[in-house]
Length: 122
Image 1 (spheres, helix red, strand yellow):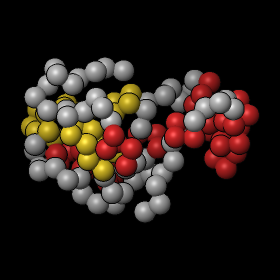
Image 2: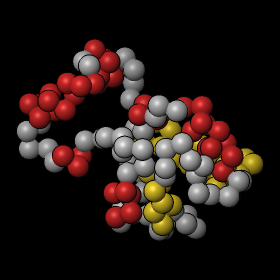
Image 3: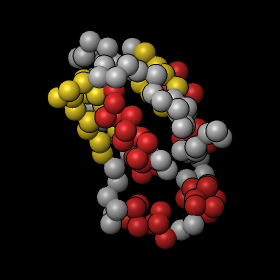
Image 4: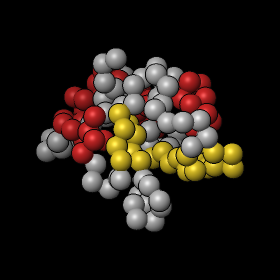
């Protein structure tokens, strides 16, 4: 993953998980609320990056509107998502979500619970 801290004027980490508040590689951390506007002024952000998160977003249209709202004119939105037809993407679609946690425990028994993505309760 690209490290931008120190290469940009200000690096803001934003996430729905409060764990972002302890992220050591950002200058500022912000917790987002699902269904609420992002806490940034319109046209105030030069670059937004997203790494393996878009596939978890249930409200894609709302998210796209907020990204468009906060980006400066000429700003960039750069995102990476898993390949839909890769092994992980196909496996995730074939196995019901309710079984993902159990299977993760079987295949990676020493993996910390905090490593597993979970949507917070709104």
